[in-house]
Image (tube, rainbow, N blue to C red):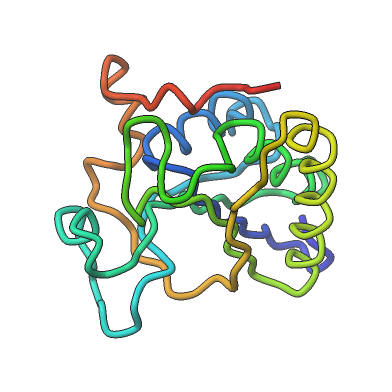
Length: 178
């Protein structure tokens, strides 16, 4: 746990939150003690006045919320650096408001940092990933790195959706890219 013995929180947006949550849980299953303690999918990064957003409203783009995953993790097992790099490995961070066929501001690539340390780590890991994986391809990471704001859990049927519905829609971009 963190220095005071409590879990830390990481919040990422990289397309349809079903697939984002699913791939994190596939590689860091809580039952195997790989550092992720629990996840939730929801909405963040929207307009202040847009309270209690729901899926239908977020999909209109009118609230500016991103579909995101909130991860509680034990940093003594998996570091924030590792989670940020994994986030970049599992989607295309070079497309604006788009992952695969999913388009709209709710599908943007974003890191919502919770502490000044997370901001510094996110910037550093982004620079490292850019140099190693995207400069050689002539592509530029467009991921937003912004302060975490208010979080709204998505409707219950979205939580762990692909675990409940293994044949449900999954964006083809949510895979290991390297």
